[in-house]
Image (cartoon, rainbow, N blue to C red; front, side, top):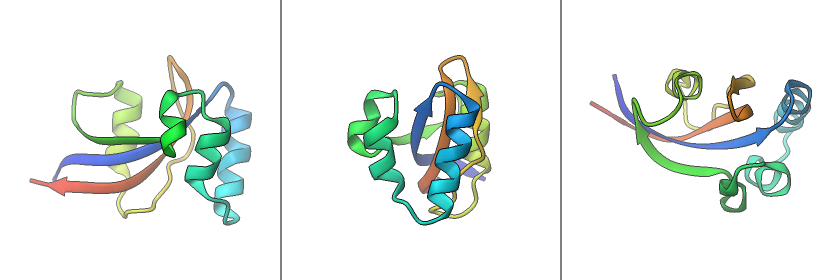
Length: 96
């Protein structure tokens, strides 16, 4: 079981934007570069990096999606929270 994950994210206002960005990532565009260009979160300037976090530290839909990612480099489908729409990339993890 995962104790903590390290993730980066891109935050945008609409699902349509998130879907377009996900298609760009799947076609080979760089996640961190896109985060720096379009993310509404201040973490965008760091490529979207949020560092390590455990359960209970993020809003539930975001946390659930981040902890469901299996392999480093995996990117989630768009996830809606009260902040907007997120794409989440797993960049590390610590298992129990």
